[in-house]
Length: 629
Image (cartoon, rainbow, N blue to C red):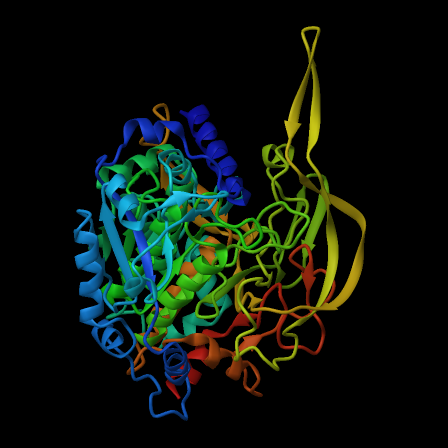
């Protein structure tokens, strides 16, 4: 039993570092055991708004107290009437695709279509073909002029199988340590649970106002199933009410595939479980809606499935805060070959979806990543594809602690940006995966948004270059008289005497805010094994972190605050950047230069913003007062 437990812990710890790998091939068993109906294949069509500029202006107006549209939100029907395609336009698409025995149905808001049918019929309807590693398509001119992009379409069956083999990327990180389960529940909560988060960021003061998130719903975008019993155990360990009827699973694909994904992908199971446990505990009065689209369901490629899941949640309009800790693609390397959309089009599709969310009063939170300014190992700085200016990008910090890690004494005296070149899983280090740190930097796909312009620290930076990119190499091994050469991927080498750099950048600056994400100062995770026959059914506890933990915590804090407001706070970003420039700012900038970086970007004294921790940490009691007005 003890050995089995150790193997499971090790497996989960190893799985966490898969987070740094982009577009790796999913387990072949998933294709063998879970097959979608051969006739089912779906893509998404992004439609052009009837008034794009007016739509963006209204998004900002909902967050402007001087506007007569301040916090006057639209329903999805209102969005459709004002900015979406007309019913006549939608019927044009329906009639056209029906000729090919393909269904075309709009998401609420009429800004996207889901097109579904057999692969052959969908391909014929779009006249799709592969050309120079890109799927090109043709539509009648009357339809083409209404279309911004087509997401998830591939021109050959071989390319389809390759696209379906891509994996979404998690942003979870584990320490390999086990939290102490004995003693008072309040002690556990203060060391590893919601009280730790609430006390650190003054959400406890909001609780004292008798606000718990009651009447609010938190939406989580996930790619695998989870056990409600794990969440129940976590709540009980923290001394909270254990009724999990407030947690709702919304399957957007096959339930069987969702459960199978959980059984073959430990990182995805851990990801969604961590998200739910953090959201449910930090907002103990809120409902939690988990929108699940499984990787193992082959109806659509992962790029389409992630966008589809967001659009489904935004269409339902149940949750005034949405959060995700998974990502697809990379701003430098893109999404992979053979797809119908460019990385610019994919990014624009998310912007459009999140604009609709903002119009409806929904705040979107997204984990910034767990490998500093490098979403993937590369000579170039690179971010995940989702760097939308309409989301709250959540970065990571480390709380004060002291310990010996890999022979180094690590002493953190005060909260700082998360960036650690010593704490890395040995297997991950051998495999040359990224070092753990809070994501941040500059978007290559999105311009600097209006709310960031002029904020001290935005588009300028101080950096400490800790890592040097090294190209692919070879590991030489002698065994039983034979010599083997094992190819190794590119990697980062730690620089012994790092260089201090000052510079400027352009684009959307990331993240916006930050909170404790370092697994060395992390939170408890209760997880029952589903991925191994030997360990299946065994429950383990770990200390986990990553911006995966912080993003759902922020969404939960949003729910707690919204439960005391007459209208949801909605589009946070223009509001929080304005608040940060006031004398009574609810944010604490982490602007020290030394011992305060995400393995590249550091703080700059006298500024309000940096690309490691954004505006800094949040005092939720003060932020609630600001939102309350």
